[in-house]
Length: 291
Length: 306
Image 1 (cartoon, rainbow over the protein chains, first blue to last red):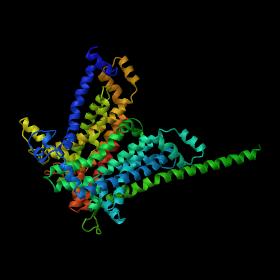
Image 2 (cartoon, one colour):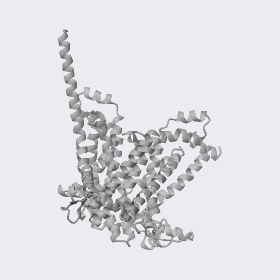
Image 3 (cartoon, one colour):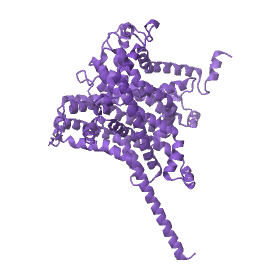
Image 4 (cartoon, rainbow over the protein chains, first blue to last red):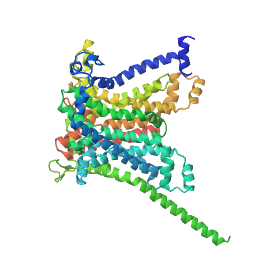
């Protein structure tokens, strides 16, 4: 068997090896542009300053210039430990609040008829269209009035409001796919309406819940605008906001800035790796037909 | 069974039905209520307040004072040259970035759809640029385009081309901002369009090729109509996202140099929170809202009829 034939065996029937070569070429080109900045960022954090500021292209540091001193430097700064803890608390709390509120809302919209029911989802999605910067002007006054400026609660609340409409939309798509005959069967067995949600719908929509949870966590973790308005002290500052401040204050300390950037992105990258297969499936299935 | 008994049980059934409908109504509304309250308090109320505020002269320094001036702020906008520049930049950025995102995403989707060995790996890493925090993306690009040690300038230098600090160059700041938008969002288009393409039943292609359609004709008459709905959703969402986006520009160029990358979102922020002119900032924000409303209405209408 020739090499080409063997390669043919690997391929699906409808793809010829010529096509496959074109596919790999395009992918190679595209993913170089896509991934180079991320990989270059990560490798740069292990470089000594001599390599970092060398006017020569080096993707990996030479063995004798490899260092983890940037990580030691950043981790020994108290403020970054605080930012990391704040970000974790805020993003986790936002995810819990959003999932609870959105699950109830999506269940209500998916299974119950009530006046205005059909406009609800359009209303939620349209609320995302409103310019954030316009909201921001009276938003601060509202938060100030109810005493939520510079608190975890205020930031969690603001983030949840941004993520809830999308999560409702997404979850409603998943819930709609579950046949109502299952609800009826459970009710025959004595389940209440909430029992149906907990025992029937939630277990069957685990992929949807993980995708909604992922979008929410990432949305909260990555947010700059609301945190920059609401956080007035180190006690509530998150990693992205801290990184932005750190960068403007330490314009020359690139080693520390890049390392802080890696630490800021690492949790979302790990989460992404865990749920990415559901994201693709979700976009093909329930996710896009929620409206 | 007598006539009246049947009548009675019918009535009882009707009452029970009515009660259950009523119960369903209340339960359904109760379930959605927390979401509605949150969105009303943090999104709807501030928006209405913002629109109201745009008719007042109001300063951040004296938040208690407000003077009704009607449409005066909107009249001022007509002769505000920075506003004109920001409006143009917003439209330019949004149209160029979303067009490129769509075309690149479409091309990548066609390639990602092929079942070649290892394709799963490519599919899974695609959206990595989309999940990064904006500040991390800006930090990477900022580092890569630094004069002297930035990798972009090192490569340009090796090729014998002139080097420069891109964010600080009036002619290059906008292209690099567009590049960041496309780098970040094109993968999302690719995955969404790929998912949509993969759900097209294979018989449609078989029927088309039976009728002698070339691959290009198949793409035109089978693929494109079947991904039209996903395309519309993605384009509308991204036009809104890009037009309203604040942090990519604020964190990278800050709107400079010379207002070359100033967009409406950053201009609202500066007017309201740097120059303390809350009412005027709100008026610019309302203009953004109106533009997006018109865009969405027209686009959805066109998509419905076309």
